[in-house]
Image 1 (tube, one colour):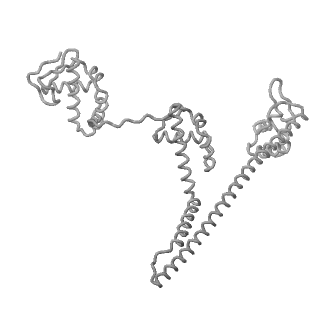
Image 2: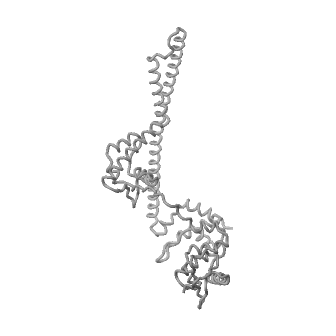
Image 3: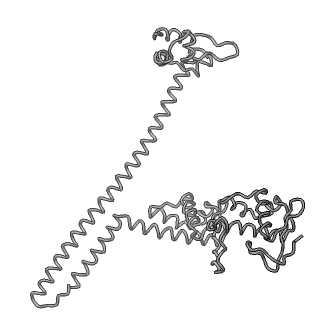
Amino acid sequence: MVTENDVRVAASRIRARSAPPGSLKERVSVRSVRRELGGGSFGDIARPLAKWKADENYHPVIEQADLPEAFEQRLAALARDLLEQARVEATRERLSDFAEVERRRQAHEEILAEAAAQVDHLEDQVAALRSELALLRAADVATGQDGDAPPAIAAPAAQQAAAARGFVDALMGKKLAREADAFWAQVRDAVEAAMRERGPMPAHAIYRSLPAELRRQGESVGLPLTPGWLRYHLLRMAEAGEGLAEIDGRFGLAEPQPEPVPGEPAAPALADEVREMGKRRFWRRFVREVHVLLSKAGPLTADEILRRMDPEWIAASERFQRITPGRLRFKLRGRIDEGRPFAELSGERFAAVLGEEPWDGESAMSGAVRNG
């Protein structure tokens, strides 16, 4: 079993060994120590080796350069100092951020507490005024006078209630929401005016074209207007189809969409029709399409027919039995035997036999004339 002393001795030997000519100095690692010892468990070597590296202040990157020992120690100390300084600066920056966040949180809590206290005070005043008003009305009823509330009492009560509602709205954020909506409505009007005047522009150009007063207003309502925020809102408006369009990073006014013209309903897709067909009806329609093709193109082989057929018909045949040249020849020959308007010519070509009226895909035709 490998002991801690064996690991330390082997690591020290590897460390003291000079670098071979033209190559780097050997690195002290679990593998190199195990090779130096001639065997041993990786776990037994790893723990004492880690302790040795900490005790000996081993830095392989520096030592592999084969620098003088004093210079290595100085370089390692300098690296430690720089690392510690970087950590201190990073911590100081985080602490300053935390302090700023805490300061803002306390300020917001103070504002919230003040608003809540003001709301409580106003609610108490409203309750007192309502009690006083109820007493006055009761006194009027007892003396036989008109029960209407005196204007001098009712008016202040209404004013206090309105003020209370204003503070409640501010407390619940409703006032800020209304101000934000009004602010972005003004921004949109200004953006559209700039686009009408100058055409499509990138977000930063639109931002520069906005009035300075509008940008200052955003800060006053707690919504600082920046090119990034403006770009975000413009993208949202463009995606929502709210009169703006974005093309290659530029924003402009979207063209008004024409009203759809009422017309005939679109014909259903072939795939939808096939789903409602039975097998017999589908092949009757398919063979009729073959007859129409042969009527226009003249005699064709089965391969040529399938190449010229609408691909939708070929794909639709998979629902029942995918059509192939051999299967098509079989079906056409069967139709010929049944007296349908087809004829087979030399070279395995098939021709349509034309009649006085278009073929319905099912019945035999009399008085037909071969096409081709």
